[in-house]
Image (cartoon, rainbow, N blue to C red; front, side, top):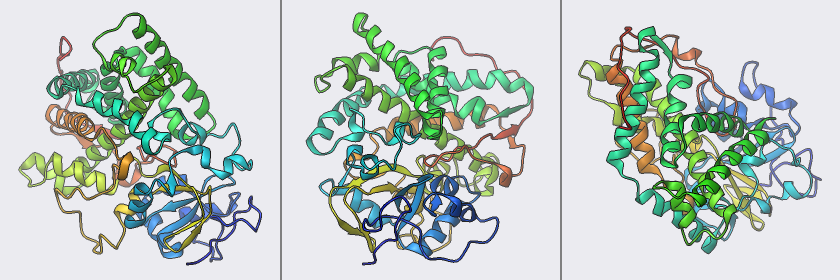
Length: 443
């Protein structure tokens, strides 16, 4: 076991992720910009936003092993868990690695500012994400019960209508941004409908969520607005119950107060929207740029379901997932982990771990041994509806715009700033202009 270097903001007597003794990276490498940070570590957002994040994670693995020191924001260090087996360890051992952000020592010693943009994603909330053990199971059951009530056929028809109507808005133009005019909007309108919100409220939620997941200066304001909209909906449903998911959560016996009801809805909508946006975006990008999938339109062997799985391996919806917090001193991947240290789940890096993927070849179609949905008690509860929405969105776009092509070279696609999700800033496409009728009714 090796002892980790020290972060600049933590006294030398305290172990934790910090700058390693290493040569300067070459100019142009994402790691080249990390040395100006408060810890001297690679900023996690630089890895996520790199042209090839897997190359960055491989360099980190070569330098550190499967558990690497990174920087979440200037001066705030954390461990990035990149090993497949190590990630399974921390997700399955709640008695050692807690999901409760109140155990984060850098919150208590002032390293993390009270107005930090990290807190909407990493601060403790009264919901399933921040709970362990029996408390987690109590708060998880309303989510599982709510998802089990979803009528998949009805949802698929409604998502098809949403997708068709969105495409109808730009189809006569012959061009579109498949992220901002499509992939970003489809999941939010789909989820908003499930919870009884209209399209205008859905768009407001979307703007707030983009800020929240960016973990930058406007993150806390976005979080406040997001919760205000949902709290108004919760209180309206208490006065006027309807047949929607909001009413299901309000009436669930496991949720004891308004805060728990609100936060349960926050989890469902926020996690479901951002991750499905990423999944739709990357699957469409694969279908338009990878010859194996682009050939689908001309009788190729690999189709949408194969592209969905490939995207989960290469570009998991949460590239990195916050967080686990060590409940006592321990060792992981040869690194000394101090009580209260923050560990980030490196889903993308773990999917590329040479211990489980020793070759450089393409992922085998149908292989779903990836960690895109995490593992252990906190594994994503909504994999089925997420796949349903994503598959419907991709299929609808390809069916209605069969000659669609990416309008820029694939290597020119850039990424929204975030340490967590890797969503294109834009995905401009061209296609034959056509008039697509708007569908009537709710699908």
